[in-house]
Image 1 (cartoon, rainbow, N blue to C red):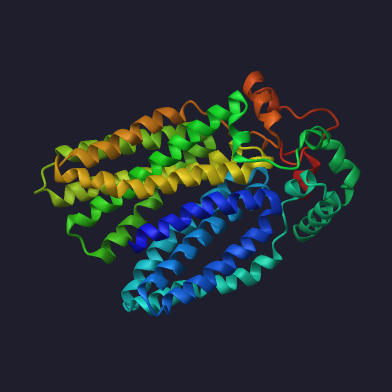
Image 2 (cartoon, rainbow, N blue to C red):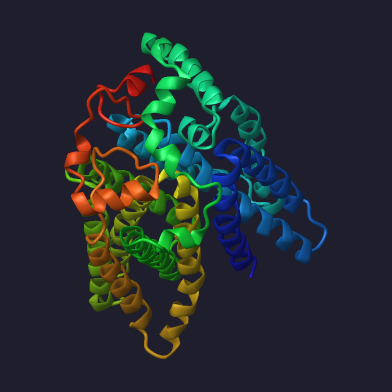
Length: 416
């Protein structure tokens, strides 16, 4: 029950905090999410009643969504195109090492209250150093705050030792985003993701991919817990299998593309899960190994989810779009235990469902546009234009133009 309530909080955070971030900025919502996680986690650790504990866990789930969404979105809007994949990989490995670290902390602190408190304390530190983060320059410009954007850009350029930052002016920023600024509305909603054909197709496909990835991931996690393996050892296996899986993923992300990595990982994961149905239960080690490989493939798919979706949605609705797809991911996580219950009637049915859904979503991923080495879109109109003309021409920088996020020759990226 507490886990379901926690996931419900994550779901609510995806809907609420993603929308607020597009309206008020990435940095303020990230600060608030860190603060909410710290306070809610501490309060939950010392709750005096079960209902109160559930309440604080719900708020922790909301805060988690705010931290993930705003951290990723803030970084992707600052990081130059040529190193975006590498930075995304560092994030993914941080998650992996966190899983491994958790196993050791949980083994050493087996009292649940102190364990809860131990994993909460770092968020006080995160809250303090998050004040140092600059707001997204792209978001500031699109929200008529070019002066503040220029200040942040020059500060970042100075920290990185880039003299090109001194050449930037508010006039340059505005002139090179004139089209985006002229198309910018004061308010956007989730409905804007479905009003135009290319955006609509992108929204539906990413929703399916995120739902299925989370559904299969958590469904497989539930099944692994029934293999009779020690819970601490299983946590280590869960984390360790991600290391080689994400190495392969980052290579394909850099040299092949996002769409291939996403689709292939899901199809391979689904195939392995279904294949595991036919392995006798007596071969416990083999079945566990297959399930772990399937989990690794799903981890690779997850590592691509944020990067690909973040590059598909334009700046004006990026957080709204990410909020939508992470909402679908949380729904998938909540539905996964229900599918597991079908095993009471037909033993192999849960794994068949998890595997089949993963394969279908893998095929769906190939319907999405490729975003490797492509500029981040700023407006919905830009996404529609790319969908109609193809992204090949978009890779060519326009004469005398200095895009915020584009080729390695742009003054903006040189200054960062």
